[in-house]
Length: 432
Image (cartoon, rainbow, N blue to C red; front, top):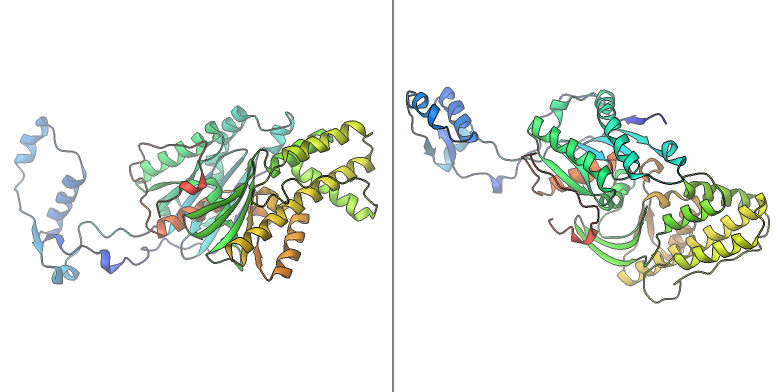
């Protein structure tokens, strides 16, 4: 499958950065009264390891000159040896958590400059699901070519980058290692900070890339891959779990039933297409599935029983085109009703009036339509990411990384170490 790319904004030379906070500026200036050549030498010696005994004799021949400290009021007249740390303007995002390779460039002032994406769907369709080893190897082949393509279309160069954000987890361990190692290597080579981003936080914040966009606080429904969660979002890094699936996720249930129906991989979109075709036919559906945990009194989900009910029906019926469409339609109706009712209950319990829906299942047409109808009746606003940002992508990672850097989170500047988290709860994002 050919890579998809989008370039936004006219090319422009890299700026000098956003303004720093005066309250955090140093109250003294190193190097005051030292000539430029001396300040350069002092900076080099400060930023490199201590000299070995072989080089001490050579350094001892250089005339010494003491550094002086200038009063705070004269700092504006003397160049700073080490400038104040400012949030980087251009952030590179790398996504390799599963079976999509995504690269994007997000500018703090100009927005999303471009993003490229390669899907491994065709490769995995032969096996009916994602093969982790194959996914990892394909990420290795795709990341750097996608990076070059993204830079070219955005009119940027590697030297323009101010920071790198990569998906640190959760996801497939081998796939995550590809993005993490490439990000760390680039960060070390370019001497820029590297920041690990939570995959679900990327999805959660992706609707903020669209217009109109939500404002904090809001309720978020995350339906991505193996995750189905309701979160209360008070701000960046301030997440409270309201409810989640106790067994299968909605996306997993879609994929498994689609496979049982003999539909093409990936199963979720194929099942939704089959259900939509049956709905347009105007036929009466003879099947109805249970709505698990619809009246449970909490905000948790369960889809394993629904999957079992569908399996039982499939084994009993002859799978003609009409029957296949009816089962797909009935299954989708059950999932959509449960997700919708739980979302409305979450808004009521939290007292909030904004709902964000993110993740691959968020692209489902029936889910979007039903949620919009219910939200309008309840007087709530609902926000979805653009369809191109519902699947895994680098744009959401670059954006989430930029938001965290703008909020002052400390990033790794060494590039010599990196870590992944194949399992990682979103609630643990407490460093903001």
